Image (tube, rainbow, N blue to C red; front, side, top):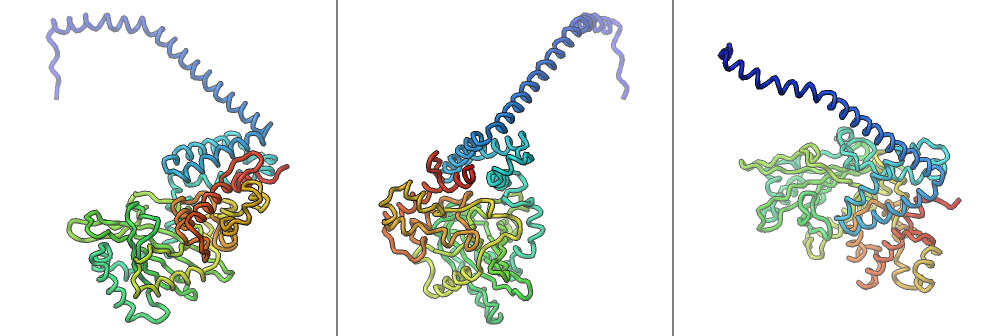
Length: 450
C-alpha cells in the first residue's frame, strides 16, 4: 500500500523539529564514543584483575596444596553433614561442591602430576560427587541420563502383563488393591513354578514416593528372571493411594538385578509415572521422558536392591511368606555393581569403618565395652566387596530409620536409647572434621599423611 506524502507545511515543521535533534546527536557522538571506549577499558581492566586473581590463587594452591586441600575438605565435609541432617542445607552444600570443582578446573589440578599423585582420592571423589550437578546427569552416573536409559531399556521396562489397564486402575487405589492382587493370582495360575510372581502390599517405614513424600503404601511385585536367557529379576513397585484421598500417587519403580558368576550382580533403575486422564485411562511413561527430572538412585540404593522392612502389622498373614522370600532373594544376589555406570569405590569407605584407635580417641577407652560400640559393625557387611559401603552421598531418613528403628545392625537386641547412641556415634565418627582426630570421610579424602 502506498503512503501519502505530508503537505508542504507539515514537512517543513517536521524538518525543523528534527534538525536540532540530529545536530545534537552529531555533537554528542564523540562524547559517546569516548564513554564507550572508557567502558571497554574498565571491562578489560576488570577481566585482567579477575584473571590475575585466579592465576594468583592457583599459584598459592600449587605452592601450598596441603593447606588448600585441607580447607576444602573441611568445608565440604561440614556442608555434607549439614545437608545430610537437613534438606534445607542442600543448596549450600551444592555451592561448596561447585566451588571446589570449579577451582580444580581453573587451576588444572587434574593435569598436575604432582598434585594428582598426592591427592588422587580427593580429585576422583569430587569428580564423582559432582556428576549429579550436571543437568543431564541427575542420576549421578558416568553417562548422561539419556544414554543410561537408552542402554538399559531391556532391563528396566515394566513387563507387559503388568500394564493391563484394569490392573493399573485397581493397583492405583487402596480400595481396589485386592482386585489387583486377584489379577496377579490369575497370572500365577498359568505360570511355571520358577516363574511365579512374588507379591505383597505393605507400608514403608521411611520413604515416600518420588512424587509424594507422604505416601508410604506399596504393592511390590518381584518378577523372576532367567539367567540362562539373560533375563533379569525385576522388582516392580507401585505406589498406592491412601484410603479416602483424591490425589493419586503416580510413581512406579523398577529395579532390576542381573546376577553374575563372580558373586556380584548388576543393578539398574528407572522410575515411571502414571497419568490419570479424565477419560479414565492411565498411561504410564518414564519419569525422565515426561520431563519430571530424576534422582540419584545410588544415594539410597547402596546395596543395589533394598531389603523390605515394613511397618509392623501392614503385611497380612497370608503374605508373610512372600516377604521372607523376597528378602532371601535379596541376600542371594551378592555384591552390588552398577553395570559400569558408577564406580562406587571412588566414594570411599562408609559408616563404622573407623579404626579401633580412632574410636578410642574420639569416644574414650570405656566406650568399646558399651553395647553401642559392639554394635557399630555396619562395615562388616556394608563394604565394597559385600553389600556396598554406606558412604556419602547417602540418605539420612533411610539410615536413621534402619538403625533407630531396629532393623540394623541385623539380629541385635538393643534398647531405643542404645540405638540412638549408635546412630549419633556413627554419624559423628564419619563426618568429624577434627584436626587431630578426623572422621572417616575427611581421613579418606586427605589420604595418608606424607
